[in-house]
Length: 291
Image (cartoon, rainbow, N blue to C red; front, side, top):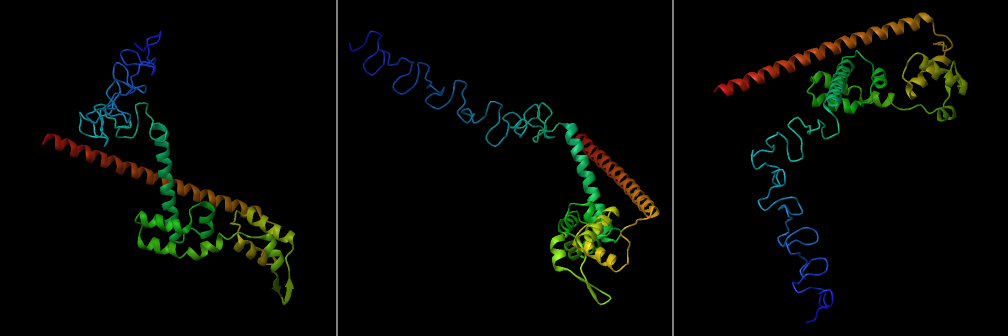
């Protein structure tokens, strides 16, 4: 009859039309599934295609391709999670958000972002009002003046603040230009009392150390100015009276304490405002429910 001892014909199929692996000529087994587990309509034994959707268009969790749940008709299922497994607060069942942070870590990040926002806003206001020099701003901030102006506009700060910041665009470029010692020593000379004087490398290094000791900004502008003042005898870079150091430190501490007090007051005001908004929203919801 054309079958070998094992019951297969020359093409490798038995009398029922299946090969040794249990598949027919079309590649389906007795239950109608191929070797990858899909039937002729391309659905698996559980009724889902290779994209994870059944014939009705829903995945195993009941969401369609647009992310709408079949029972709630919203983007969240009965347990409050969306198609990707996150709730309205952005956390999954394990309490982790999309960035891999838990609630405590996210709260700390948000607090830090708030502190950064308040700090940047405070610097913008102080700089624009002349309560902070451009040198002080550069030393205490990584945000460029262009970025600060953009921030001020985005946060709808007053026109006076924005205009005040624009005045520093030119000086910001000046005070962010780095000092190049080799180039300076090769190309620079000073005219003092009618004489041409070239600062030595040791004098340049001493002036830079003087700036560091005074907590000053070190850039092309400040180094050149300090060297010129030193060679003209206007400053003494070899000494720094202890009284000057103490007064400077005292002033810095007082300024820092004032800033911290102001920041704390601002944070408290923000939290109070948030609480008031939350209470108002809660009241609105209760009124709608009563209606």
